[in-house]
Image 1 (cartoon, rainbow, N blue to C red):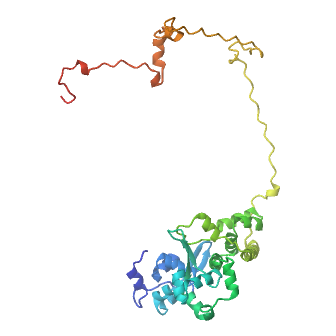
Image 2: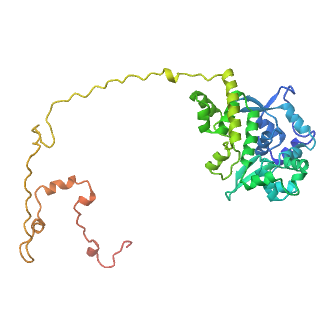
Length: 376
């Protein structure tokens, strides 16, 4: 159900819109689409609210989530209504984030590169520039809680990290995304699939030797969902969604082992055929074709006898010397214009246009009297 801006605003007006009727206030669940329409949010804002935890969800299956009716009532009854919810999930770029914190853009970039503030989303704009998006509310809260980092010289360790090329923005985004996916995981297999997607197929192949288990993890989640990527190339998406820091990789491997252990206890993977018990089938003999006697056609003709291996070749016939100008005509001149009796019979057998003899063309215009034309 699509909702316009006016209808979405009406849903947040006290006493307006349709009343929620979900039966039990504690146990009733609604679909994500219904929850989005009742909150009066568009699709992008709703998914962002779910991602940052403003709209709690309940996992009802692998890849299936719903929202409790009581959470929708709580959000609609909160002070500020829909506008307050949109303010809590507002995202800003680095320039707007610097203004929200009251610092310059250069200082904000240094704080972001060293991991003090972490982005929620990223995309590539039409100029092929990578843009990081941060929650405005968190930036303001961080500035209020850390006034020493807002003014004056930055700590020496922070400056050395920036000068050394450290950039933790990608890792910060992955930390947020993995935490959200693990929070919304349905079971241990879903949780293990999140860590496997973070590590990438190469490291998972080493960490999970069982091919059946790797297949289940890959079917559940092949890669981290990056969200709106814009004009990002596949290589950039793969790099930003895969763990690359040593500490990040070590943490993901430990979490994968823990989740995989719990998954094996709850629902082990069914091995249809054990690879070590499969024996190769013996080769089936293929009968050779029996030669059928008959006349042999080839270099020996129809006689059935092959020519001798060292048969002497006839000596080449020397061409007669060309006569001088004014003397006897050459061989081409002697044969020009001569036609055998078989030539007319072979004409209908020619299949190519360039091999056919061109038909005689009669000039009809020469036989018409002067003044005759196509339209006359």
